[in-house]
Amino acid sequence: MWSRKKLKQNAKDIMNDNYFNMLGVSVIATLLNGSLIFSINEYFNQLGKMINVQSDPFMEISANENPQAFFVILISLLIGSFFIIIFRLLFNLLIANPITVGHSKYYIKNRKNQGNFKDLFYAFRHNYINIVIVMLLMYIKIFLWTLLLIIPGIIKSYEYSMIPYILSERPDISYKEAFELSKQLTEDQKINLFNLDLSFIGWDLLGMLVCGFGIIFVYPYYYATHVEAYEKLKEIKQIEISPKIPPIPTL
Image 1 (cartoon, rainbow, N blue to C red):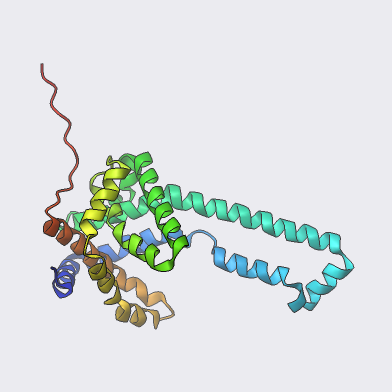
Image 2 (image 1 turned 90 degrees about the horizontal axis):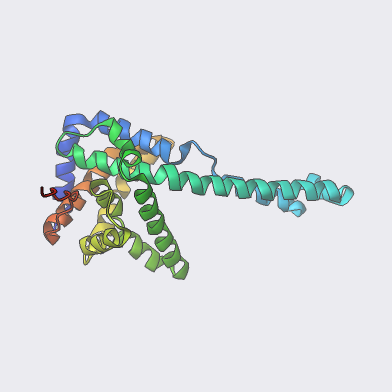
């Protein structure tokens, strides 16, 4: 067993040394992970308003008086939404997911006060293609489980939650081994990880009071605590995750 209180205290001790560095890295990672691209939800809301001509007198007149022009607008919106979806998927696949691994690398190294801003781009310099593939398979599996029911999807998301950390230590690892290690680490621990996330709800609500902006100040606390959980799980399960050292060729 492990104590949430102990994990959080360890995270606080780390934050006392370089909180603002941690904050800066997490904010930049968050920006690179999605704030630089369009909001698809908002786009589809606008698309829905355009299609729902009955609720918009202007569009109703346009559709009735000039159906050809309305059809062209509708097709343009559909094509535009398609390209935005493709762009978002490619962005997540090729940039956001590797940044997530690099972010994990930073926080793991930061436990020993060795974290550096360049760690955010770790995945782009170490087995980039393998990291992209493993992270893609992780999200595909979570998505497929979520299609069955929400609860299995949540369970699997916790089961696979250690994969970014594993990749940050073993970027060369095969997808089968990465999934198996994450499964071993989280076995009988998913409810504890879920409760750990729940323990941050108060902080999240407090951060959202400042127009949602204040939540960014909780990032270092959240991520540092979860890295502590990852390290504790490795200790409990007695699992060593380290880069494979190639054999020394014999003469």
